[in-house]
Amino acid sequence: MKEIWLSTLSVAEATVQTLMKKLQTYGLPCSGHRWQDDLQAMAWLWPKEEICKPQCAFWVILGSREALLKPETRFGLSLLAFCVHAKRGLGFPIVVLQTEGASLAAAELPTALQRALILPAGDAGTPAKLVAKAHAKAADLPSAYYLDMVGNPHFGQWFEIRPAAGTWPGVIFGVDEGEISFQAVGPSGELPKTSTLNYPMQGLKIEVDGKNFSAWAVRNEVGNGSSYYVKVSGAPANLLFGAFSEESEAEMYRVALK
Image (cartoon, rainbow, N blue to C red; front, side, top):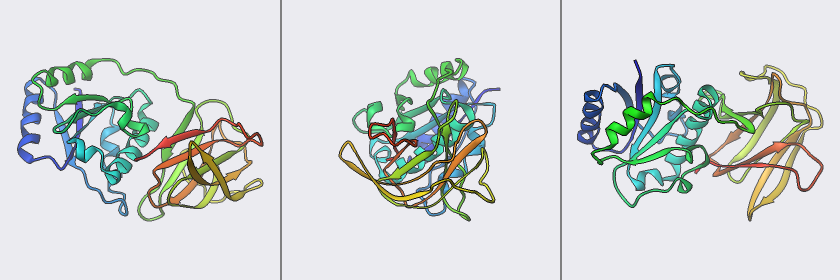
């Protein structure tokens, strides 16, 4: 049976219960949790396994415009969304149910949430739309890159990056805030115990669209079973990464996390 996972952002319990009862009436079971903005403990991570279960049709985020614009919340939601898309595919649906405030546009959300379906939580037609969404086939969307999180509160916040297809001759990775403290290359899916880096570089400075990034790089080939891993402390608003190149006009991907 299809079901959904609900993350609530500072929403009154009565509102949550009303929504869940309506969905159950429509034959759509719903489980969920209250969102916690504890980035130090990586509280955003724990719903990942529930959302990634095969029976979960999509992930719903319930909250006001104010809550959805809060930087700490957006950062955690972004990381969880990238984790989910890494496991379920880029086409796995995310739905934003907005409870209050002027209607959000997709462009106002961070990169990982910009494909989300945004609906008014109180609209009478919303439950029926959610049921239809649950039974619709998820889109098979292509991506140029693979981005996942492999960290936990014990050994830190790590990003895993590789091309979605083919290989890169190396990787360059930067943040606009926070700090890069370690990089490695190894088999995809787990942090390597050891890593030999080819021509590692640190302290690179890159400016893109008026934003300054501090970057590290390696020239190890990644893809086809290998990934680049980078440890980042803090909560950067933007990531910048791509295949290593000596060219000044090399293609880079900028990902907004807040």
